Image (cartoon, rainbow, N blue to C red; front, side, top):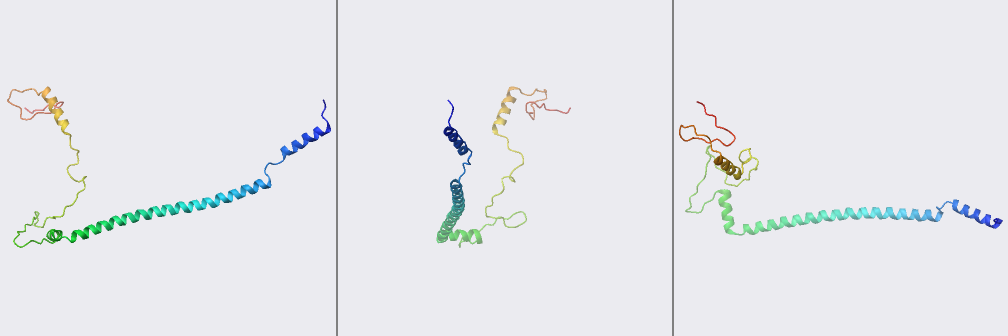
Length: 171
């Protein structure tokens, strides 16, 4: 069966329709409107996020200031107590009650030793080497008991060398 002229024109029309660009003016306008909406919402979202950050930082600052105010109120209440005032006068100014005897600790230069407690840096306290745990000494004692040093015959040893290191005696 041969196709008639009507069938050929239908195929040609279909081919033209398929070759026709799919992006129409209406589709392009929808894309432009969508892009404008996305840009406007993005800038609004950015402003919203910045404002939330500012609000959070201000709420943190308010909480810190409230805590500081609470500390100051507590300190004010302590200063209303006569016993606290008396204690502070003794500590800060060296006041004594009538009949009390005041003692002042002096250092080797004759200057007053600070009575205010000061915290020192833990790195500066003690020696630079780390302390040995007690179980190392205990285990060394067990090893020494299992393998005592050889007796020289001159009486009891005055010093016991740890295991693994023989005592070198000069004769």
